[in-house]
Image (cartoon, rainbow, N blue to C red):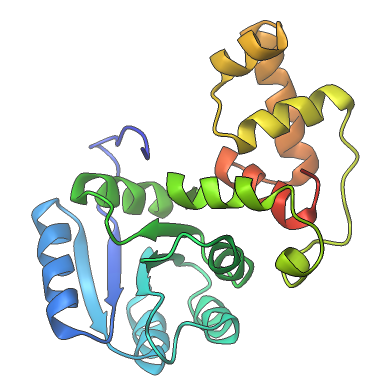
Length: 224
């Protein structure tokens, strides 16, 4: 789901944050067995901030259900205190409102707790390289939300919207649906080269780097 990992990439340094010791220990074991360096554990929002400043991790993995680290304000404080770290939210919920809140507050990843260990490790490695990653189930929830107006997206909407051409909008809709370049080309009867150029233009106009970022931006802004 999260792509291929280059094993030559540097080992990511990670802080694991969860209020439950057994969950932290289990996740730490999975990550360390896969070659990820777990440099610290935190059980509260205050500990996350303190360790983030002290250890300068690449990724901070946070359980969304932590009582003092689950709301948007707390996540913003954590992201601000560890500005060089990527925040990955682990959640049992794929609801669009939770995804939008987490990403709006500074999270770069939103992954469900049922994600297989190899995919979780792949996601952490890609986050450490600066990508934004959202579970397929969470993207599906955002797609379902895309046709809704008003209250459901009000807190996360973006007021300034870039101008996309009609063809770029067609491509963006298919990106939100999870289509790859080959599928987009078939759907729109255009070449892969043309699709790639449209995707490049969309990324530039939206100021994003990945398809997941583009999909989230499209839904949050009401473009789609």
